[in-house]
Image 1 (cartoon, helix red, strand yellow):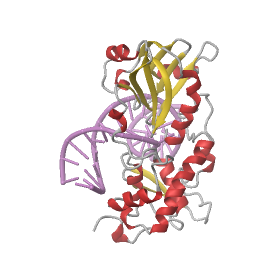
Image 2: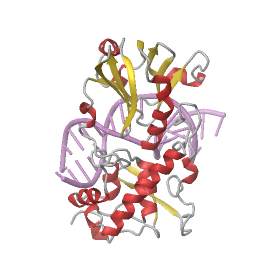
Image 3: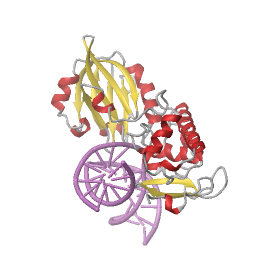
Image 4: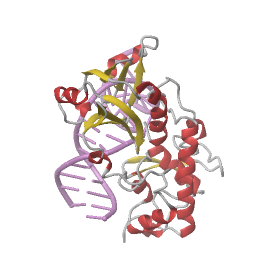
Length: 288
DNA sequence: CTATGGCCCTGGTTGC
DNA sequence: TGCAACCAGGGCCATA
């Protein structure tokens, strides 16, 4: 599920309930969610710490911890495919259907934070230094550090297919399968175009459409295409109603009417319009 | 460097 | 209806 817009929505909704809270205890239902640390050590690291800030970096939710005013590490949460954060209070108990999938629970001085994750791919991990996670990440697509000229240089420095490159979190951090397909369609670019063979104007379009797509999706609180993603308030997002290509295989392109096609690129289902996103010349799909 | 396939997991949907 | 196969908003790792 969650890509940048869903993670951003999650952060905005849990922030008020978490900032300022103190972690009184920990319950771990699936130890691997901790990313290799034992439950015992995780408990020791976070018990007694105060959550002073809730923020987002790429697809991570970052809880900054302090003990008596001094930095005390971070909890990095990655929702992967099916993860969700829920705040439970006596007045707002967890939805009954979710209880069986709580993998980590933080007992707070007011309420609980439940990390729910059906498929168990998600992570809820403690690190001492932010860099341990963020060092390998590419720029934030909506941040000031992501510029059109920098993007052009970076694309030109690689010889990869556009779609897998845009999914690569070390190249650009935050896009996932849905928003890459949507941004490529809006840019009129075929997912198998090579990154180093784009005209300048195409790079400009792609740059702007990536940012516009993500911004519009955040405004609509992300996309919900099945029962997994819900905002922490339990509501589905609204951006799925705006999809141009994702999940629309065989349906008419909303711009030109031709049927949307689905192919597999880099092992990921890929949706595009063969008229609005013309294929590169055959020799340009793979390296010569 | 780039690409590919397997793997981690569970549940919903599809097709016979 | 029953059941197997296939699919899924992600990412890591080993191997060509």
